[in-house]
Length: 460
Image (cartoon, rainbow, N blue to C red):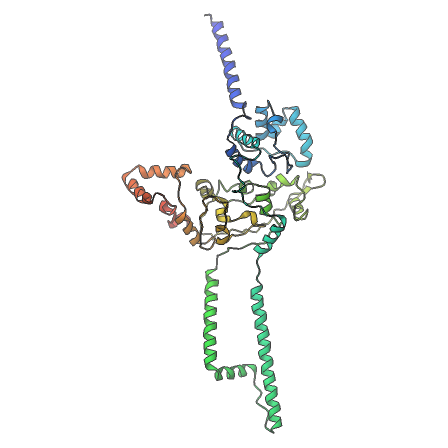
């Protein structure tokens, strides 16, 4: 065979190989995919703006995306990962879509998802939101607007009990002083009638001392009761230092978790994006808020009042739907809700990614909250929609609460590479095998048995 023929064959093979891998890489985005994985990815990356049922949120619905983008597999991947790059291709569909929606919602931000993630998301979108079958029984009840307002009032609490104690105490004091004055007046009148000198003028303190001396037994018993009461109240107050369950601070912008997390089904990690990869869950920046509120300019409860505060912070003109040039942005001073002492180490990543713990295990029924709230054990334990809920009795965010959870929480070595690696280390030597055998005697391993009670795990 001549050299030119061989080169021609190799060239053709190279062309076919290139076409094959290009097809393998870019084609088939609308086929296959894991809808269950796609549901999680959709809620984390898309649900805050897009719906799958045709309704308009802060961006067009993704319903029918496979038919609208038919034959544009590579282009839709590029559009999701790099919208400006996709627009620069001049594709008529993308140009028309941007012209139609950009003025209302702004340009879509680039999404940090892989091609495989996109395939899974599209597979979920094609199910119409029913991946994994119906879940009505598992889903938390979303409150109505009236119930949200009622829940907000309930969480704010009622401190009127102490007020009534103060009022009753003042009334009794007034009655006592009045009774002393009446007695003194009557005694003076009787002495005048009988021709006797007026009683000695004594102060209220002297009168009180004389009365207590006359009624020593009663005063002693009453004093003992008061001492016990003050001791109990004082002990509880001292033990309550650093215990913040039920804490619901006011925020500079009224914000309803019930509307966002439950009614709109926005995944917690869309706003608290660092929970799965950092020590802190993080507070969303105003830019994250604007991903939705470029288009959503009126709240269901507060109207434009609270959303206008977001616009004021970032410099956005709601009428023209444009950012104000040269605007001096103002950070929003949110009040921290969940706060641990400085000497305590806690990592969201370890719990969310490694332990795969549901946010509501620690934060309670978020679908009932308005602004941030430190859930009580009763609120957490009453939840029926949390898989594998660990019911705890200690006060929330205390050391006893954490230790109780570590003592009850079981470890599934298949949950993460971390636990699987720990099991491998146990099995790699005789001491480890013996330790693992002792731990697994009851058929399970708890976080405590894996070192979760060691002081150095949480304290520097």
